[in-house]
Amino acid sequence: MTERVLALYERLSRRERRLASAAAALTCILVVWLILVPGIRALSDKLDGVAALKQELSSTKRLLARQERELERYGEELAKLDWDVPASRRVLEFSNEVSALAQEAGITFNYTGKVERESVKDSSLAEYYIEVDFRPDMRSLVLFLKALEASPRLYVVRGITIQRALPPDYRPRVSMGVSALVREGDEG
Image (cartoon, rainbow, N blue to C red):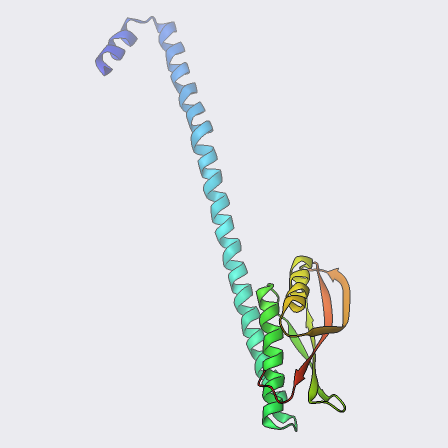
């Protein structure tokens, strides 16, 4: 096949050879432009995506480390409280339940340090209350509020403050108080 192409090329005049060479060069350039350049762009986009994912992973690791420090600090604060052991365990369980619901909605929050337990007069109930701060996207906030509402425990949002979104992530700052009534004789 190659010999036939070479023989055909040899029979062409000088002007026709130049034209055939120019057409072959143009075809090669067109192939590179239409196939290789988009492939290189796609590879570059993928590499940029990998870099962004690596950055998001390191950011998530930092947030998880911060959350662990906050939970440790919160546990230390709970240990300082003068409550009986079962009541303090219930507060910790209550705060862990709220934290788990938040994490399911994609929210990591900080405890503000305000944790309360009040006995309800003339009953075996106690009200547990915590305040939290977080910076969610609005979808995650709505999912968290729906999770609180759908939970088998009766959670009450006693107050919520949403402040405008600021740089760098343009997410609103949310402060929220959450409480629940718990029968003191129950285990959860």
